[in-house]
Length: 416
Ligand code: ATP
Ligand code: MG
Image 1 (cartoon, rainbow, N blue to C red):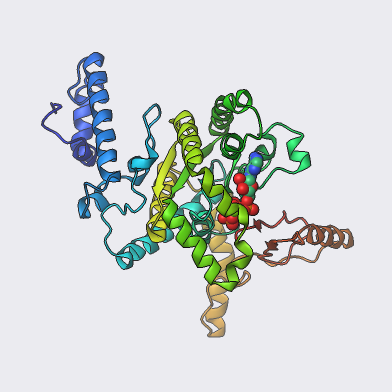
Image 2 (image 1 turned 180 degrees about the horizontal axis):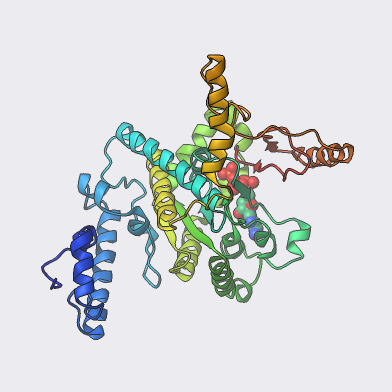
């Protein structure tokens, strides 16, 4: 029998046949040597504490090197454990988890991007679950840069970005979650929120837009709202991009020095700096109160843009991997299709003495040719096109001419 202290659990999982045999032998009655629930609960509490200590040491930059790079899941390392304490001032925004050189990190990032693309494809194909990524940060902390990176690694079909600004009159006339509910992902989608419902317990609190008794009760409302999303198959990831005030000022200065970025500068960016401590306090409370098992917060050290991208991408990849998506079963008999449309062509071509080209019966991109539609179909197609015309500041990408019944193309809003 495998006993608690002698076997590493990481290894236990790896021993496929041996592990199975052990579990069968025990008839699932004894779980890896734990005989009593009470003792196990104690051990879990001890391990939780160990993990928290480790997170703390890592964030403080005390533990570095290749061990950190390889060994730890970033989704755990940067996660704010539900019910734990958080001191944002103690988290080092320069932290790079043992990565010393940007160049090496960029290589790692490239591999992660490929993995992300494959996983998002699977999510889209499966069409059962979805992922919501909420990005929150103080000005110039890199929300835009993160969005450009993460969404750039995915297929625009099946991804959306939405930026939440000062609520419009119509939005203000509804409860604060009204505008959010309309933008959450559908099954198969990844949606990134550039600012989110959290503004309603952050800027609203700091700037006294609503009374304390109003924003105080919102934490619970947010938790309930996110719980519903999760119950409906949406995975929720929340990121706070953590920079230092000095780094923020450096970035503002860079904008001043670059005429192409002058449009981004607003005086409020500078005046809001006076409220830095209030924002940090508001973030701290929001994160502590709403970091739940089902919708965890992650604090990402973001003074180094490359590390910020690496950490966020890695957490997104780890999350998608854990979602265990499956490709749907084919709706046709693949063997028959192969025989009917490919082997026949191959034989014909052989007779003519020409090598058939792969996918010859289809369009170049593997799609079946679009059949000529009825006159009224053309009208529906034209209407869909009109609706697809971008609003100010939006760019609409038509990946293909819209067939008459095609659904609306994805909109990529305000990512610039
Ligand atoms: P950038 O980094 O490009 O400045 P941004 O997200 O700050 O991007 P802005 O258009 O500059 O975009 O600012 C949007 C503003 O809208 C922010 O100051 C934010 O605090 C504010 N805002 C968002 N949601 C709310 C809300 N619910 N109530 C009040 N203000 C909000
Ligand atoms: Mg701004």
